[in-house]
Image 1 (tube, rainbow, N blue to C red):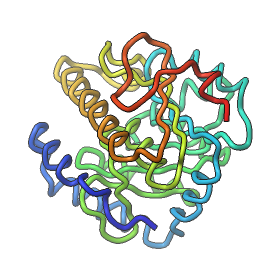
Image 2 (image 1 turned 30 degrees about the vertical axis):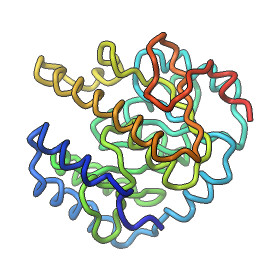
Image 3 (image 1 turned 180 degrees about the vertical axis):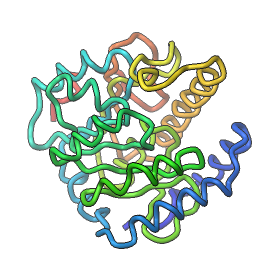
Image 4 (image 1 turned 180 degrees about the horizontal axis):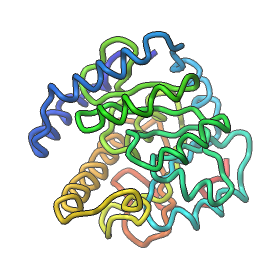
Amino acid sequence: MVEEPPPGWMEWYERIIQDFGFPVERDEEAAATLSRFMSDRRCLVAELATRFSNSGCVVVAGAYNTVAEEATILSESLSPRIIVVAADTATTPLLEAGLTPDIVVTDLDGDFGDIFECWRRGALVAVHAHGDNIERLREYFPRLCERVEATCQCLPRGHIHNFGGFTDGDRAVFMAAALGARKIVTIGMCFTREVGKYSIATKKPTPDWVRMKRMKLSYAERLLAWLASERRDVEFIDSTSVDDAPPLGFRKMPLKEALRF
């Protein structure tokens, strides 16, 4: 079981809360709220670690515009040793492509109907607590009575874990790496272009929201580069179908090729 954040994460967390002006107390309140919800639920970290470590490949789907196209390619290449992880709003295009992710990583600001549908079909849902989603935790989390784990970005206490990571997409990569994945392929992840349409679908994007989202994407890219530099034992591949360079430490590769193992 992973009890502490990865070495170096708390230094990144300090920078994040300073740059965004997030109050640590709200993050801690959210983590405590989620931990209380988890108090009577079985810890699934050991089970997740077994699944990740035994996989041939973990595909983490972000919510950039290309993910629908990439999900179609993925659906044609699935095997029992490929684990599909959806980052929150990526659940919708995956479902539309006929894919049910094995795991959904979410702070519950996407379409909860689609997240719940994935859960109903057997997906495990990793729910994240932060200072801005306490009310969503209270509203939606009680509907997930099993196959659920909890994460936070502050120091974990009780039944909650911190694997590192900030946005749903990079946090999913951090979780897979922390729990034994040896090959991680990202799709639908673009950090330098416009905010993806699936990220915007459930929002009313004001200029301030877009500005903050772009700041978050910038941090996600830097965090993934940091993770790749720290975890040389993991193969990191980006198969997002844009020409942009991937995060440092990630190899760019067409998805069909990346899925071979």
